[in-house]
Image (cartoon, rainbow, N blue to C red; front, side):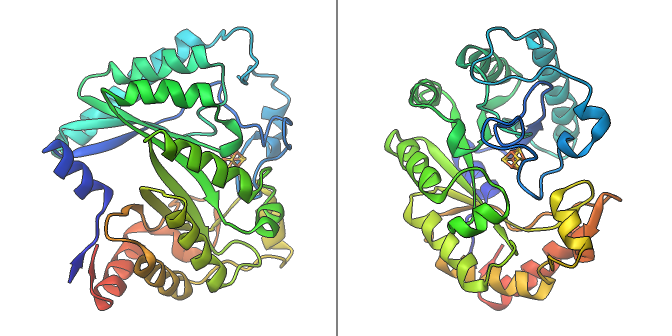
Length: 315
Ligand code: SF4
């Protein structure tokens, strides 16, 4: 039985402590695929305010890399402190001793560098924080930002999480991704050239994709040098463009059986040093439209563990 290199195992071996990511979501962050810079509405599966008329009319302030000022900075700093400490207290009760601040919601490099520096460094100053993980897209990263992250990485554990989703341009167009495959390849490679750690996000079950296409995306993530991978099934939440496609019969979600079989094949493609950050995702509230099997993450994980065990892997 081969023990897979999960993120938990990697962090434990490196820090000699139990380490957990603390997700952060800050007011004022958006995405160039939502605010009209590259597109409006976002990826078809993304729940954002383009689909909420009240919010869309509220004229709230959002950052972008050209913002001259950030009136939300003090609030954002406070949000980091509050969210981090609340989640830390919860995880400490479960035995975790150190933490990575995970800038998760929307595009977390889509702001002036001066703002990003204040926010990242404030997160790193939180108790028991050993590093950062920054979720972003390839069209929202600059050489200057990467050079700054290299500086941080001398002292801290720094990860950049890129949404790859698929390595097929026709799929990226169908999901209104707003960038192409060449952009992701270029920026992952630039990030790796600087020695930074990269986690690639992939989605199985995207519209029009076959199992072979999903596996080809995994193979490319490996080829581009990703250190870690996150995979999850595409599920439909209310108030998204995908929900309309689903309701009109234009999109059929992947079945649990197909997802797990594809996942097992994907794991076989990974080199032993590849870190597996996630093998599924779900949403246990009424915003989920389909598929129903994505409502219960525990049962998904149980079935995945079993299937991986059958293929000789300990997850
Ligand atoms: S890149 Fe992320 S935040 Fe932006 S539209 Fe797509 S899913 Fe939403």
